Length: 609
Ligand code: F6R
Image 1 (cartoon, protein in one colour):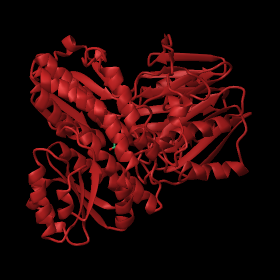
Image 2 (tube, helix red, strand yellow):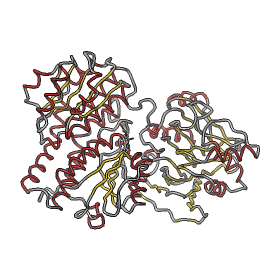
Image 3 (cartoon, protein in one colour):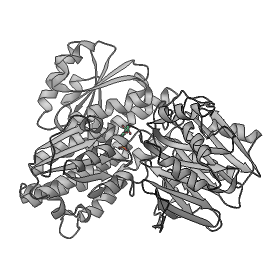
């Protein structure tokens, strides 16, 4: 949800800011802009659309100067237009500001400022902050920012520059992520560490209600009261190769193909090779009351919500704890019954999703302990939780989540087995069997990736279908939802996911001969039930594409197309059946000539509610 970056140093700022924006473009791509101080003037360039439009403009008029800020926008207030693109400025154009988040009380601040004679040129909430800083400025940009922060409600990460203080960037945070990067003779600020990584590994994650003044050789962090704080400097462990495409045409396909090695690495990290014991050093078991917990509530959004649904099946089946799952934006407003006896699990790839973060705060407010299942270390949800279980998927840059999903499923399976062991709800033989099955997953995932010709055939055949239906039962019901989400968010084809048992309660009315139906039918307890559903669909002339277990010859008699996945314990089958669904969405999107890494209207981390 918007990416911001700033540089102050001795080099030309424009190329450094543009490289930072390239890393942050996954956060939004409705418009982009930069502002650079040149002597006593500030030169801003803004363009509608993806970063490449701004880049083309800059080839003709790159602002010169060594202090600057940049922004890539995901529109909240105001359509994508040049007027609404950041950086925004005050009446005198001497303050330029970029923002990620939402200023909730912008309308009342704007009214006051209009009353005092300020002139506004955009429809954004952000512009009020530039005018507030103008109003408060009396020779100290940091002071003006702190005074403005005291007026603001909502979420923000801000960076401002001013022609009054040409060698300075002031940045501030409340609810939206912000990282400072420290170098020799330069400093940076950005929405995440990937944007500073090619210049420095020394970073500080700003906390809420903190502001920082950056100059080439100086950095000062202060709290809202203006008290100076000691910076807690961290080293980034990320490598540049982790955030490049590595020879693949798109991030999404790179990330899909990373899944076997990711699973291998996580298994090696989590399961002792000597004893087969699962290790979760970070869960702080006693504090969370894992052995005695009465109820678990999982909150999350989107793909992470689908992983949570699978998690419910795992935790209930293996650890025998009652589990509720809720979409974070609903959990927050429905007066949920959670208390000191409930463990709330928040699942999020980015760790920044505003609704999930709000859910964590809500849970804390009701006395629950929170365990988060997170990919991005140091993220807001990570820091807000009592304990965090990292899924170790590595940076996920494509907007559509793939490897983070399988990493979430894997961590939930491991955690459920761990909990089952602790609570004495699993037989040793079953535990051993599951460990063996888990260890077989990487090779089976690789087999699917190496043998996905049928997926390509289906993608070619059905790229122009107007609708898709995805059906699954039990462990694979959430994957039906996930498959449909992947297809619709990338290819803009209408797709619905549904529990196969629910189909005849409504969705079957949609089906006709033009309607491809993807049925997830790996071998297992619900296989026969799925076959009955397939018959019901065939009776309505639906075109069936089955995702079934390798070696099942029977299924071909009932379907037009069969995509095979290797045999695995049915509990772990979602880790395999999701891969053809990811690949299908990828190939259909490519066939349609669409941007698979940056689908329209979306952004990777949803930092507004
Ligand atoms: C879909 C997708 C989104 C995210 C959702 C939650 O492909 O990526 O649905 O899963 O926005 O994001 P996180 O996991 O970062 O909280």
